[in-house]
Each structure stands twice: as C-alpha cells, then as structure tokens.
Image (cartoon, rainbow, N blue to C red):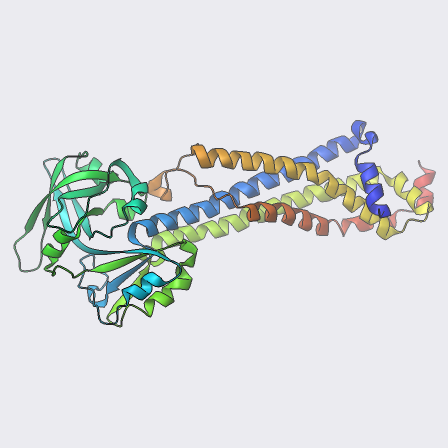
Amino acid sequence: MKFPLYFSKKIAFSKDNKNNLSRIIVFIGRLSVALGIIVSLITVSTGIGSKTAIKERMADFSGHISIKSKQSNNSYNSSILSTEGLQIDKIKQLEDVASTQKYVSVSGILRNEHNFAGIIFKGVGKDFDAERFRKFIIAGTTPDITEKGFNSGVCISQKIANDLHLNVKDSIVAVFSKENQSPLYRKFEVVGIYKTDIKMIDDLFIIGGINHARKIQGMEKNEVGGIDVFLKNINYIDEDAPKIDKLVGYKNYIVKATDEYPQIMDFIAIFDTNIALIIIIMLVVVIINIVMVLLILIIERTNSIGMLKTLGATNAQIQTIFINYTLMIMIPGLVIGNLVGIGFLLIQKYFGVIKLNPENYYLSTVPVDLNILHILAISVGILLVSAISLILPSYLISKISPVKSLKYS
C-alpha cells in the first residue's frame, strides 16, 4: 500500500479524532456533503421526471408524431389526408414505431341545461390505442370503436364533465356547424372521463367514433383526417421525425408532439436552467465547506506535518495524505445523502406524497425519474470536483516549517 493512502487511513480512523475539534469539523463536512447529495438527487430526478412525464402525456394523447394534410392549415377541422406518396406500411415497419391510429377531428359545442363548452371532437377508428389511453381514464372506460355504423359513446375530460355537470352514462348533445350549412346535432353518451393534467387538452378534446367525424366533415368511408404515430420512446422523436417525414408524401406534413404545444415546451425548458443552477449552487456550498474542513485539519495537525517532514516525507506526499483524508471524511456523507435522497424519491415515486396544481405545472403529482447513472454521476462528480478544489488550499502545507511546528508542539 502506498504511504500517503496508508497514513490517510490511519488518521481518518484514529480514535484521537473523537474528542477534539476534528469531531465538529468532520460533522460539518459530512453534513454539507449529505445535503448537497440530497438536494442534487431530488433536483435532477424530479426535474428530468417532470420533463419526461409532460412530454409523454402529450405524446400518449395525440401521438408522438402526427401526420396531417397540408390543406388543414393547422385547423382543428381535419382535411382529407392525401394517400399520394403516403407509405403507412413502411412507417409501421420502422424499428422505433410502436403503433399508429387514424383519426378525424372537428370543432363543435357541447351544451346542456347547465352550461356549454367549445370542444374538439376527435374521432378515432378501430385501430385506436385504447390501452395507451387508459392511463388517463379516471371514471368509466374508453369508447368501444368498431367502425360499423355510428358509435354513440364518447370519452370527455374531467374539466368538461365538471363544467357541464356530467357523469358516466349521462347523455349530451353536440352541435357542429360548417360554412353555408345548417348546424348538425349529435347525441352522445358519456362512457368515460379522462384527465391528462394538460390544460390545452383537457379544456377541449373529447374522444369518439371516427364515423361521426367523417359524416360531419363530408368524408367517404375510408378517408381519414390524420394519423397518429406512437413511438417506443419519447427520446426517439427528433431522430425518427425525418424518417417518417420522407414517407408521408408531399401533400402531407408531420407535427411532433413536442412542437404541438410550444408554450409547454417553453415551460419545460426552464427545468434545464433550474437543474443546472441548483447543482452549481450545491457544488459551491460543498466545495466551500470541504475546503474549510481541509484548512482547519491542516492547522490542527501542524505538529504531525512537521514530524512527517522531519522523517523525510515530501510536500506532495503530505498534500496527498490530507486530500485523501478529507475525501474519506466525505464518504459517509455521500452514503447518508444517497440513502436519504433515494428513500425520499422512492416514497414520492410510489405514493405521490407531494402534489402539484396541474393548472400551473401540467402535472398533479411530482414525478420521479430514478436513473442509476444519474445517481452515480452526482456522487462521483461531487467527489471529483471536491478533490480538484482541494489541490490549491493543500499547498499551505509547503509553507509549514518542520522546525517551528515541532518547537511549539
């Protein structure tokens, strides 16, 4: 074993540290490290968890990538999707594509004796990914879509249900109007109530059968207004979008879920800034405390430094001893910080103790992304940065004269 490491262990685990100033200094150092780890873990896990959860909610509702007709001009009323150049089979064969579903959307109004609400009726077909949508259901079930005739069942948001005082199995009349035509009335039965926590979705969308939407839009039996493409992972969206774009034909275009609601993406971008800022602040606090610990330990052990120099130890060796000693002090703080931080995150992940206002945060509970790589990166990063920051103050050792240090021992 190398001498500096051996000597570091001897003084780190020495019983002499139990009844002097070292005890207080060691406690302060370990406490600052533990707090730095806890705050960093919570910041990174909840920040990344929130970003991912919001993106996945948008994507699971409207598809990671949506194929639309250029004639729609970003309108909620679907135009007929062109089949010219559209290679849907090749899109389905892409490695990252999980599924696709066709739809037709049309704007209208729901009304009853209590209130009225402007809505977007999204008509889906028999390829509707009910399992993916089921995570949003808070009452009832998803519509049973067969495309045989007109399915009267619809799924509405909790917000619309509250505004119109609707419950599962209640009936509601929808009014749709087209230019130069009389209003069209449709009677639906509420079979399910959903909640995504994303205001722009919950305020507007109801889910029903595609044949109703086709009829209102004057489409033929096999015509659709768009296709939702679901990927296996939200992180693939930027990589796969160009591949899908090449297969939709020149009369159609694609919209990524992350581009559908730019105001939400602007909100999500704030998380990156907050995460970086908090981690920098924690690193500064940890470094200041650890440097303070090192300096006090050097002053307290001046006699030992003088003795080591008298016995032939070089300044570099003694510096290494004290840097190792300080890092060893940090390790219990790292362990405690990880245990407390991970424990808190596990409680939040499985019990959702901390709630949020979805009106402001697009989420009702704080989501957690527990990634072993992030946990290791935080611990190793704090150790490395602390080790580097200790190099400069450790040069104080070279200024200590062995004669004077032993003279006043």
